[in-house]
Image 1 (cartoon, one colour):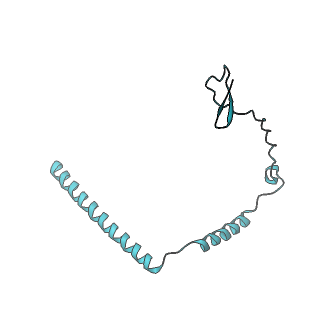
Image 2 (image 1 turned 60 degrees about the vertical axis):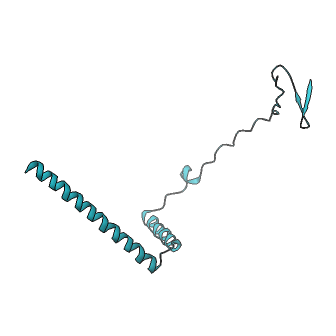
Image 3 (image 1 turned 30 degrees about the vertical axis):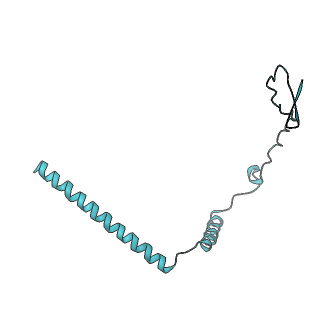
Length: 110
């Protein structure tokens, strides 16, 4: 028996009693071609020497530094001020905790 739902024919059978539309069979996917080895993997290309690698490192580092967005003088001073305030607050907090723990230790031992 064939039912029509939204202009799509759905075939009912014992394996599909609800009349759910079944997916069409697809062709099997062909396996991927074997991976080709690079020249380096085959051993044909030698690794660059240590001085050549060092020179390449400095060239790459210079290229990266040219891409950096450096902060302005105003941003630098502002960030430095925030840092100094945070260091002062941290130092005061640690000094208070140290003094309090020293006082408790003197009471217990002394």
